[in-house]
Length: 499
Ligand code: C2O
Ligand code: CU
Ligand code: CU
Image 1 (cartoon, rainbow, N blue to C red):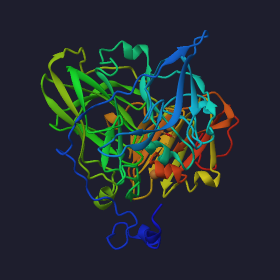
Image 2 (cartoon, rainbow, N blue to C red; image 1 turned 120 degrees about the horizontal axis):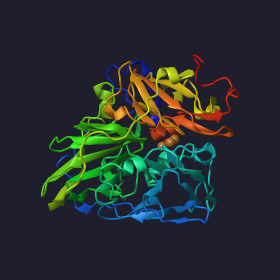
Image 3 (cartoon, rainbow, N blue to C red; image 1 turned 135 degrees about the vertical axis):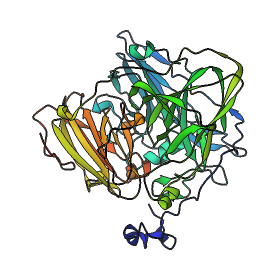
């Protein structure tokens, strides 16, 4: 929220966004941050451990996660109070194969209630870990489901209403890798921690005592002035193979990144949020808003060094707003150091997996979602925006438009969607595969198509929301249930436009 001194001018702000904001600016931003060439890269990139699991006699793979407090030496001087799962900061990587039934026993050893959400996972709403699934301190919650979706880089994080930015910033997040036969049959790097590397990027800001602080906030929320990758500032990765696969996850609360390499080399984009593309795309950079993932493969030659950077983020807003929301920053992220001799990798750019394209003709319902201020279609979560019901097995088109001059994003639980069009045009490669989260640039129409495969459950809801966490916390979120065909109720939030 704006600071009190700024509230007086907040109303005027909306009308004059395109004019000078210098006299009246509730979101003064942090100026432009440029760390290119100034990061030491003194610490080896830690690889989150693979989570241990046990398999029950009936074949369920059981993981144990404990949400706990800890402390981490992020920088010289005092340690930072951090939170993690099964450790001081962040969490282990869960891996499961398509077809496996998994259970996760979450123990909450924090002093406050939390939830655990499986971002990108297709699973029953009762196991989804949204704001209604609060786990009180000392309690254990044990969701269980059968993994049934293509190989993908998913992740998990808390989702308590109003507390998500805080808990995620403290460090509660981890990766969930789904594997399947189609992915296993491809010549892709997949040796975890060797040539298949999780890269969880967070921005953070430390106060004089080295504790996390929200600091200056753009409209998008708290913006950090330093980057941590897998919980470490200034990391390097020793590369030992000619091709390395990076699973990039933007775990930040608000900051978007536009990842590329310091020498301008291109890389192969192979996967987006929900899994592999039909074929790899050769790109020079790829942008990720909070919550989005991509998998890229970068080729290296022996003995060289190259830096993963983030520069020239495009939020689709006017320059002044881009600056205040950290889009003009230039940031060193991770140094890749190739060994003097590299083991050859079999990876070749090209065809990956077949992808069933949904088309407009598949959809029975169209809805429109307008993002404005901290509301979706004029409703906030705390207005009781219990919103939509959709028919199990049905396909819908959701047109999402951000009607502000400021950035927002859109994430849907319980599905992976495809983009039919962006302002009428076909999506670029990074938006052409399975997605669960997108940046919504101002005044652009995003046409999403998705099939609700979940079984009917009228008691438990999925969420859709802006994934800028301070906006989500402010209630920029709605919910939907998946119900038996014929049991849909009239939409309160969305507008049904056909059928
Ligand atoms: Cu990653 Cu509802 O969120
Ligand atoms: Cu989610
Ligand atoms: Cu938003």
